[in-house]
Length: 113
Length: 111
Image (cartoon, rainbow over all chains, first blue to last red; front, side, top):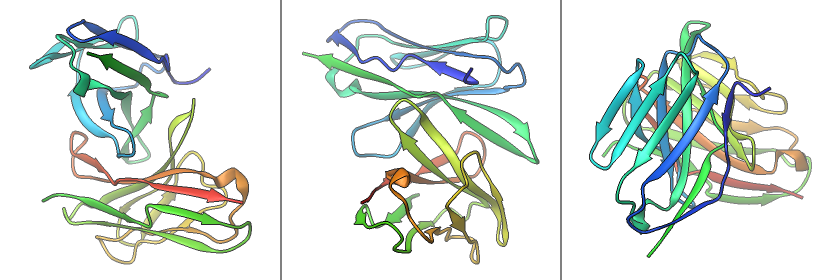
C-alpha cells in the first residue's frame, strides 16, 4: 500500500464547475499537507499548504485536512481553463533530521470552456 | 527572480554512456534534492542534500550519484544509464517547507 493515494483521473469539467481533488494517506506522522500544481512541461509549483486539520482558503482555492480520517482535499471554485493542470498532493514528516516530502501520483484536471 | 535551473531540458542517450544533469539555484538554500517522475508513480526522491558535502539517499537511489561541492549546485550523475532510467527528472531547492521550488525538468530517454 502506498503511503499517499491519489486518483490519477483524468478529471474533465466544464468552466465554472466546482472541482474536488482528494488524497488519502496512511501515516499519522505526517504534519504538513501541501498541494502542488504542475502545468504541462513545467515543474510543480506550490499552491497551498496547511499544518493542521481544518480549512484554508486562498481565492478560489480551499484546502481541507481531516487528520482523523487521514484525508485531504483541494476545492477549486469557479474553475477556469487556466486551471487545467496536474495537481499533486504532498505530505511531510520529520525523518532523519529533515522534513521528508511524500507525493501523491497526481490528478490530471481539464477544464473545458 | 528566485529560480532553479536544470540542463539539459531534453536528452536522448544510449545505454552505458555516462551523463550529468546540472542543477543550480539562486536562493542560497541549504536543502536540495532530485526527483524522478513516472506515470502512475508520482514524484519519487532520488537523492537529497542538506548542505555542502552532505548528501544522502532518497527512495530510489540505485544507479544515480550526486555531489554537492558548492551550495548553489547539485548535479545528478548517471554513470551507466539503463533504459529503466528513462524518466522526467526534477531538481528542487528548499528553504522552509513552504518554500520548495522545482526546476523545469529534464526529460531523459535511454535507448
